[in-house]
Length: 276
View 1 (tube, rainbow, N blue to C red):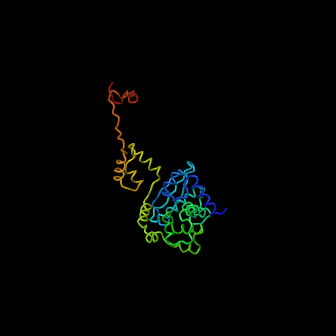
View 2: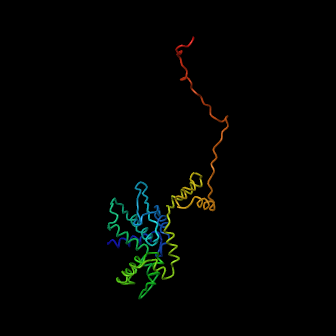
């Protein structure tokens, strides 16, 4: 079985196992966290850093981190790519992160087929003799993928030839969104992708700690990347009010008896120069 086939098979199995059908996938961060139990975060990172995956072998829990970006389609493909590494247990100490290893190639294939399943594409387009860039735009908008991933899927399903695929792979999502009237939606996607996001389980524990009065609003705000005032207002509106812990008071009569041993302070010898 080729790497492409392995990726396609794993993507289909993941959709089947979690009853995802062949429809477009929505919020991938929430989807991955809810289906796998692993933690996902959107982080501030350098321009050439897209994603990483780490594993805690003791708890058998993975952490997927992706960069905040103004390119939401790339962020989605990165999330799917990193999910592949988790599912295939691609844990390695290799420091050459730029190498196109078999694991990287397989993860790319998984991401494409997870985001644009062939059956889903056929169901969306139906029978078409020819396609235009308007159709490409519709596929990009429907499945929320880059024109490059959409073009590869269209070619794999026989909708376009290799020459058209190569041509369409050079197009950009902003250009298609502007030309075909969904630039407002794309800007909304950009705004969502261009903000930090903490793992949901971590944030849940932080909110619970705030409710118990042991975590400050600033702690929750730091995790969310917003102001403490905004957090406090939001939590108050949601009915989350921190408990006030009053220190216990005791009467003097309730204090335990304390016996002090002063024997070590007594001097059995008479000091020099003292009178008897």
